[in-house]
Image 1 (cartoon, protein in one colour):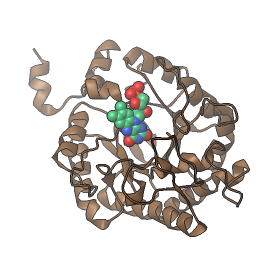
Image 2 (cartoon, rainbow, N blue to C red):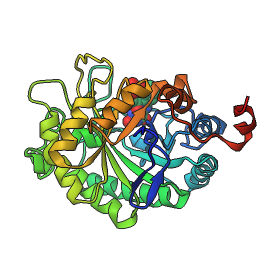
Image 3 (tube, rainbow, N blue to C red):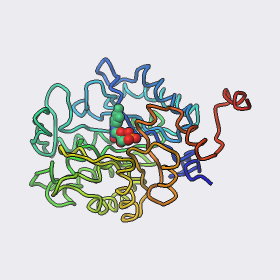
Length: 339
Ligand SMILES: Cc1cc2nc3c(=O)[nH]c(=O)nc-3n(C[C@H](O)[C@H](O)[C@H](O)COP(=O)(O)O)c2cc1C
């Protein structure tokens, strides 16, 4: 029996399989207003027709200053709800569960005006130097994540993921390489975790559904975060009601990464075993057999694919064929299936 195609439930939300579309920025809000456009409707719905179990909509900014680019999707205003609700409806029509990644780009924002981070240190010489956040700024940003969660709920999403990876704001607080604060938001692991702790607590006051956090489990630099260091934080997340850690890595500081098939899977395994929490594995996973190996060896509970689902929106059918599993297809295809 294939585990990849086994239904899977978290907090009453049943996913028809363990295939997840990893969040991917489409940089397609062309009016720079964070709004859903035709592209998003076509792009996400296609993967739903392709039988992906859970589709996580790209990094969506909770504040305009927290956009990676001016073309990012936004959720900082009630005006964003209708467009997102439409994408949710389209995806759900085909049996996909829907997630959204709530994000703040921190010092990696490339928008006009001031950008914000735990410490006034630029990512590298191509990025702006951020303003060090005051405690009021922190409070406002935590509230923005909460308001984003309220809007995501109104739009009908099944899952919320907090973007704590890839060197964006939450990740910048977690890593000692980017967080040089001397107040209660910097220094010890407890202090660096405080912004995420407050964000999770606030989100949990308005969101009862599955909550994921994406982490960069390895900074790939001496003195930076490691999968083992994240085990401790993952335990705290679990206590706070986080359901799954989506385990990515890197990008909090410039570092060379040796990326090879499954290169982040062992980080997922370390966190899954160490913190006894559900995890998702991501990164150069491209075949059904590879996905099956990860799941059956208990190295992760869900499989996220990014670029492979750009290449092949119907990857689920490809993997089913490879694993000799018969899967449901849209009823419009069923006649064709007989021939
Ligand atoms: C076009 C593109 C956009 C991406 N945008 C995001 C994003 O919005 N949020 C995120 O957490 N990761 C983002 N990523 C990273 C992917 O989600 C994924 O972690 C990474 O590509 C590794 O998986 P893969 O080897 O299956 O592509 C992006 C990747 C690509 C290729």
